[in-house]
Image (cartoon, rainbow, N blue to C red; front, side, top):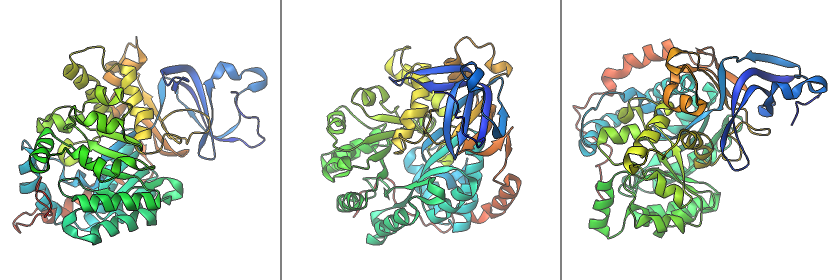
Length: 462
């Protein structure tokens, strides 16, 4: 395809870069000396500059970016996080999950105000923009505030208001009202989901009711399930079924809009045929750094891919992961999977890039809109500078991106054709002011002397 010769100039033209592209079989490749034209928030053209010679010379453009020495990638997608929890970064370290939740995190979260959520979300958006993340799937509280910050930041997001059965029917209703109120918000950049917390905090009656609401309103569901092997073992001991089997018998694996399962490190062999016979789309979000910290096993990526389940990359919240760095998640996914499988041929760098792009887009229900650099896709693009000594020389560009490049190498972040960061300068968020204001609120936020907690970890609902 050649550049458009429309009378009006393109909104944005990126030149001189190498561009990551997918072939018809979804293999990863690169176009050298590429040009990318953007019009109306969508990609109009991707191709070698040489292909546009003569009668098909580069189109005029309102804005240009000279990206020589850089690589253009689809924006990264953080498929499961709790953005406001950056305010809790480092507050609970070197603890098993039960103590982490019950003794520190859930008591602190009982202090949260909408202002804390706003500042945490804004700091998280700044971190993600600087790390080349253009879309994130968030599952938290006070989500009207997160939606407002998302709109302000220019990012794309898939948002759900979390709830527990301990909140009564009001929690589920609030999650539904949020999803309906914000679906299609921020000029279409916000999509929404129903967000029950997990099978151990939301009973089967509530999960089945959630599935009915999802079907009625055409909404997906985003929840934690089989986060760890302990959760799976506890579910089997108490109920005789795994958390994945709970999702099946409550109807959550048969939704047309799909279900996104966070973590899945406790998925076992008997769960695989359950997931394979699901009648709706199922995806799993994997955040390997947090699993290493909690001494959990890895998400069984190879087994899930074998049965056709997409596995997207994630960070979880910064309280457990300490960062929102999807580049790190990509590298760790490749390395941990090699170790877990005992096979250096799995995952390859190109497979890791596929997880970071198309699979992550599918995981959040946006596989037809983002995840690849191709005409008609939304212009969510990042430019990565690989000229640094840690990335040179380049023998295999895919390996360089996965194992050598860093999130700090992202120079430019673009969403819907709008530049949110240029040459490392944030254009939509006042970072110093956010850090200062959040810092002033931390003493009240981290107080645990009240003895409250919002929930009990891995305690079955009454």
